[in-house]
Length: 80
Image (cartoon, rainbow, N blue to C red; front, top):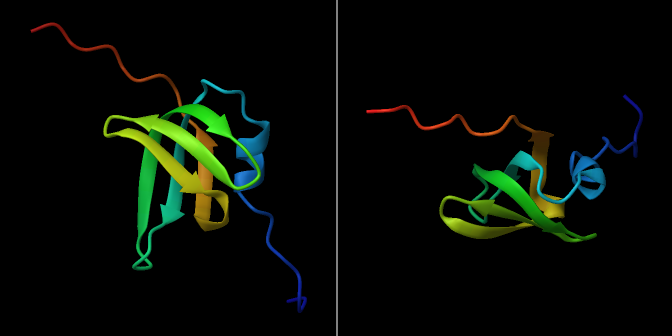
């Protein structure tokens, strides 16, 4: 292991992800546990990403992101 080496940040991919892309972002909350934000990416800058989730817009600090990836579109509702 190299001392002082940093792991690549998963948030780097969010900066290159087109706005509107459906993503899932796992990030740390204040108590140290992780949570996910799933939905279209609405905006991103050097410090935060905004994801439009079912609960509303979530602003995720990029320095708390553990993992992030593009996900396929949500499935269509099944007929009843």
